[in-house]
Length: 308
Image 1 (tube, rainbow, N blue to C red):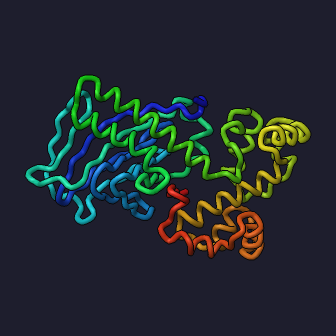
Image 2: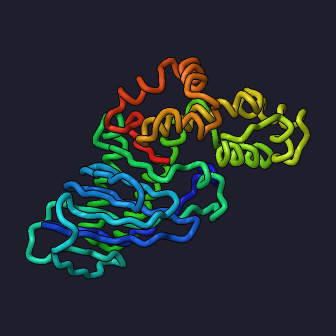
Image 3: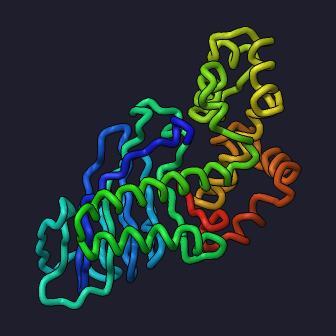
């Protein structure tokens, strides 16, 4: 397993809720993500300044930057009384005197590479995996079913088995997300190289900057010739071409995952006009920005939903 992909899940709550309920989750320190796995029913995730996210059975939500949020029932804001008990170090939470219709596994995810891991820097604010959709059902269904069974039966060592299954699940989930960014090539080798990593993170942080090869070389603390050679050896293209790929990949994510205007997205990633952006996007993806957004009304990228 690539060192950057090493994660350590901490399973905190196994929830069975019914009626009107709400559960707050505070912001975490850098280097920790939050997650929710819906094994039954439906719930809503609310974050300040963001659109609500609906999660259904089989959906997995990952907040890579540990954003604070509320998880609640589809209606209401939390009138049901809750109780909690610990079973094998996992807190089991349930609503009182109300038949549960929603089940959640909630917890935190530590990136073992540390809070300054470049992997964290390239991940969006939100990743939702819809495992009920083909072709993900078979692969993820086994892991989800295993996690739920271990927490439900609470047999000896169940929390250890469930955590190991969750580790495999989130490595697959993050890897799947990176594979959706195919136009950027294999990101992990780029992030493992000290020179390429410094440049890639800078480009992701400020894609709208008027980047030159010289500016990239200064960022990478190397010469222009070495920078070009490094990029060609790892991803098969020069730095300026990789910059365009990053801009258009970010634009694709924002077109699908947000309601921002096309003009605003174009400006944010470094294009001076919507027309120039539209032409570049069409040459790269074979579809106009507006057409891409219209064909993704459910705000999904394949089986993956992202919000930057």
